[in-house]
Image 1 (spheres, rainbow, N blue to C red):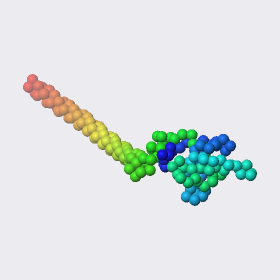
Image 2: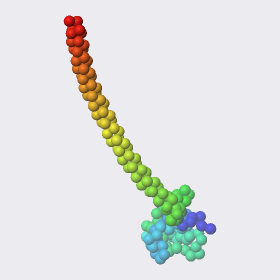
Image 3: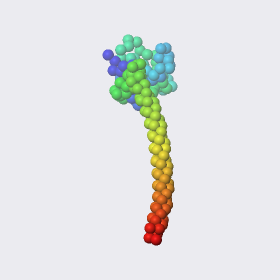
Image 4: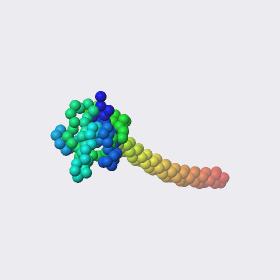
Length: 177
């Protein structure tokens, strides 16, 4: 059984070409056949050097029966150092429709929903503030009106009292005579 599954997230490190040896797992960019333009991670089974001193690697997937096309040093990204287990799990989950919905869809819906809720709460707060201001103004207007009415009533009562006092004085004067 292969150490790495399709979809695993692997951490590779650039390594000097001359340090790559048989048994290392390397990540490289495929240039031929079904590997063309794909990042491939396979095990080195043989290392050769051409007449110009360039390294050529023969690689093969652990579960494969046939070796890969020759890999030249310019194709090598690096030697695999470890498998990122958590990132591999997340990647495999997100690559399914259900996982995509759980990891991407729900957070997006949450953000949109919270923005809508914030907007609605802000508008409600503005409406309540305007309503309070309106009620405060009505109360102030009512208090002013009541004060004016009270002053008017007081003046009227004073005038009445003055008239009654004058009447009483006049009546007392006439009764004394």
